[in-house]
Each structure stands twice: as C-alpha cells, then as structure tokens.
Length: 109
Length: 338
Image (tube, one colour):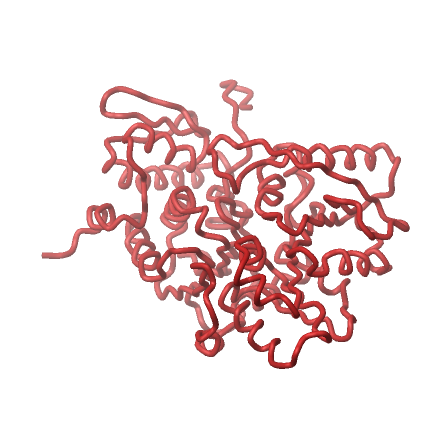
C-alpha cells in the first residue's frame, strides 16, 4: 500500500516486471516507469476503443475502465481490464478476430 | 520477496495410470543428490519414505474469479504446502529446496501450477519449475489415442520420460517419439534404458535456476521443422499441435504484453504452453518467456543470444488454433505502439 495515498497495490503483473524484462532501467514509480505505463495505456485504448470503452491510469497502481454510458470500474491488472471490457461490451475481446484486426490495422488503399 | 530463481522449485510429476510415476519418484527418493526434496503425493502408494518428507493431499478445488477450470486453485494443495512450510519454519522438519508433487494418473497438472503462480501466500516462496510426464512405451500410443488427459499431460510437459522401453517392440519407440514430437516439440524426451535413469539430472535445472537457463532454452527450440515433417504422418493428436513462430522485427514489449494477455484471456484454455526467446526493441539481452495456459512466469533474460540469429522465436503448443491466425494477430498488435 502506498503510504501517502493509501492505495493498495499488489504484486506486479508479468507485463510490468520492468526489473527483469522490457526496460531494465525503469524502476516502479520512476519517470521511465510512468512513461511506460502511459505507453501501455495508449496501446490498450487502441484496442478497447472498438468496444466502446476507455482505460485510464488510477494513482499509478490501478486501471480505471470506463464505458461511454458512464459505467466505470477499477481493476489492477490487464486480464481484469479485458474482463471488464467484455462485460461492458457483452461480446468477446478476441485478438484473433479478423474484424478487430482489420479495424486495428486497416489495409492501405 | 526472494528472487524468482531462489524460490523453492516445484516439480510436478505426472503421467497416465500405470505409466511409471511412482517408480520414478521412488528412484528420486533414493537419490542422495535429491535429499533436499519434500514430496507431496495424491495417494500413498509404494513410495518409500526414508529421509524424505511426505504429505498426502485430498482433492478439492476453489475456482478463481475468472472462472476458468485450468486456473482453479487447489485449496488442499495450498493448505498442505503451507503446513509443510510452517513446519520447516518452526524447525520441525529439515529445510528443503525442492518440492516434488506426484499427481494422480488422470490429473490435469495445470491447477497445480496455477496454485503456485496465483496464490499470494505461496508465490513468494515457491515457483513452478518443471512438469515431468511419464509415458509408458508399451501402451503409450494407445493411451494417447484414447485419453484426452494423457495428451494434455504430454503437451504440458517440460520433460517426457519414456518408461518400460525394454518391454516394448523396437518399432514402437520411433512412432511414440514422433507422436510426442507432434504434441510437444519443446519438451526434452528422456528414455529410461533398462530401468536406468539419472533422476537427479532430470529433476535439476530449469529456466529460472542458476546455471541452467541457456541449456534449458536451447532445448525448447531444439526440434527443427524437419523433425516435425518426419513426424507428420503420425496419427491424430486430438487437435493439439506445436509450432514455432519466428519474428523478424524486434517486438515492442508493451504491445506484446497487451497482445499475449489478450490472447491468453480469450484462448488460454487452448494455449497449452508458450515458450519464447524474444528480441525486445531497445533491450540487448533476449527475454525468456514461459507460460502455461492463462498463466505466465515472470520473464527473465538470457545473458546473451545463443547464436547469431536475432529473430524472436516463440513455440506454441495449442489446441484447435491455427498458426497463421496467431502469427497475423501478433504482427498487427506489434504495430500498435509505433
């Protein structure tokens, strides 16, 4: 738990284990770590936008998932983000779905 | 929290009914080099106790929030391990640095791995190390033909131990090896010769322990496509297949993490194993990736690339998923962070 803001923060997800993968130099909470988190949010939002959702950082330790209709939920890790987005969109968030892939990477005209 | 590699290594010994798990375990228990092992078995059988610690666990499971059967936490296992851990801390039993768990013949080893990767109390002290699957050379082909449990035990393995090889016809072994190659191209296949097997070497070393990382990663990618073509005429594998993606472009770690978590979220029940050596953009050392169904171990680095080839290589062992579909999806996601 953060001693200043009293926000609980659990064990890092494997995608965020910056000490041993990805950017070794980025320590949790440091500037590089924050930049990395913002970058992760950009990629996440590129995906969840197709499901009517948006994800923001919450106190550096959690994700705030919001729908266009005003529903919002705090979660800790990426798999929980995907679950909430699916619950909101009422359809599977499938990275193998050709429709989603075409939307993410439109063929050049 | 201790470094991941320093945590107590958990070795799961599995295999179909009568495939020689207990014989393997008995041999391990008599090996002085494995004297620092604690052992958990599902059923008391003919296992000699000697100087080792042995506890029995009963079967009950608790479902995790995401509801996937492969991610159930074995509450009985959790309790047994915590009790063992407490006894060790109180000095009531000798210290141990490895924990061997023998499953029943019909067990799916995945919930055991999930328990150690997911449980808050266990994950600080233990790490899943190896899945060792025994395969009876006499009945192995028929068992693989007829039992989903057997195919999954083979597909999840890090080590495949062929047992009773002195009792089977000579022509059977190449066919069995070919079938196992199709089910799991990343596992090391070890053959007990006339009952002899270096169990200590078999159970030592994984990608997280000191001194074994390079050799273990090399094993993952040892099977060439030629091997697989040779095995191609083997009989059915119940939809399970292995393939190796070779990715030319360096991977963006952020995009890769988003992609893989999404893939495992949606298809984790079909992605039985994923093992990779990744060229991550901006990182000189290759990143080692190791996952079982919905779960992924904390990634680690190799000190250096094993050869001049800088392409990322990812072995997938999947059920009813097509290589081209996964490859295309990864390519698209890898562009998202640009």
